[in-house]
Structures are given as structure tokens and as C-alpha cells.
Length: 144
Image (cartoon, rainbow, N blue to C red):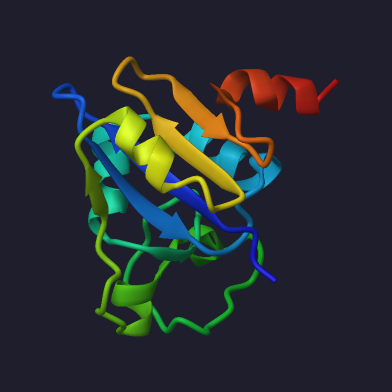
């Protein structure tokens, strides 16, 4: 069973783009990966441009067989898996656009975790309790 999440980017004009990610959305996995590897908004935009994901990796990677497993320690092991690029699915898999942060928050309250890189460069997360918090604060409390 997947731990569903969304990954979003807020732009200077206050609009938001978001994609869905099916696996491992919990803070100690996707939250950590986003914080450590996807905090550059231009890099994050390249991820969002690929559309919905099956699983988030530390690198965008290249097109590959969706079901192929790569050995731990290989560069390919850390690649993202996208439904369109790697599985060939194309229906309803592109990023969703929202007119504002509030619109995004109202729309995506059904996933277990929602992550957004805000325009000030801070990652925010909405966890299962429905509260939005800075991701750094949530990651910090997980280590205590």
C-alpha cells in the first residue's frame, strides 16, 4: 500500500504547480529527499514537468523500464520513476496548476502528505493531522 503525497512548487506570481507521488510519501523518506535534493526551484520544476510519479528519487534520471530494479548503490537506484516517462502512461498525469497556495491546500487535502516549496525557498508539509508546517521543523522533531 502506498503512502501518497503531492509535490508542489509555488511561483513568484503566487500560482502553484503540483504532481502526485504514489510511494513513500512520509516525511522520513520523501520529505528528507525533497529537503536534501530538490530545494532548487529550477531543478524542482524539471521534476514537476515530468508529471506524476510512482516514486521519488534523489535524481531525475533517464527513461528506463518502469518495473526494472536497480542494485542499491548504483546511480540508477536513486532515479525517479514517472508514470509517463517510464511507464508510457499519458492520461491525466501532467502537473496540476492552482491559482494560489490556498487553492492548492484546499484541493490536496486527501493525500497523506503534501509538500510545497514556497516562493521564499522554504519547504512546507501538510501531514495527516491537516496542519501545514515548515518541513525543517517536522524533520527536526523526527530526530529527537
